Image (spheres, rainbow, N blue to C red):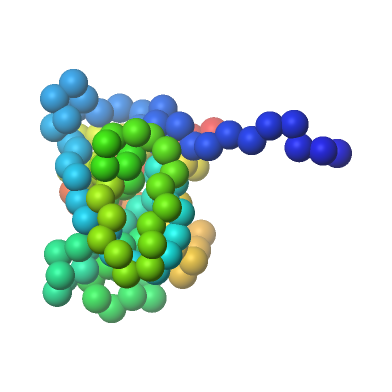
Length: 138
């Protein structure tokens, strides 16, 4: 069967509840630096301890980015669209970095080493520690 249409992740698929949305209380622009990738909204990021920059959260990392601390919700202009990041180039993203905010578990994207089960449960707990609650959605 041919593909009729494709769609990208929407902001409303990711964010279910946000405090002070009109003021941007839970959001900030951060610098992401890592391998070349297209980061859709809902991508979970960790913060590299040595540089203070962010990269995709990987359970196998040992640089601090193994701890989930932020969720991508847009590009540097706040547009909720997938953004292409060149390899080892600083790229700005709009992220949820503190709560109170609630996001959908089905809309989150992690690095390849974060698999279902204990690793995602640990990542959800790490997000909860910064006020980002992960809701089980259908």
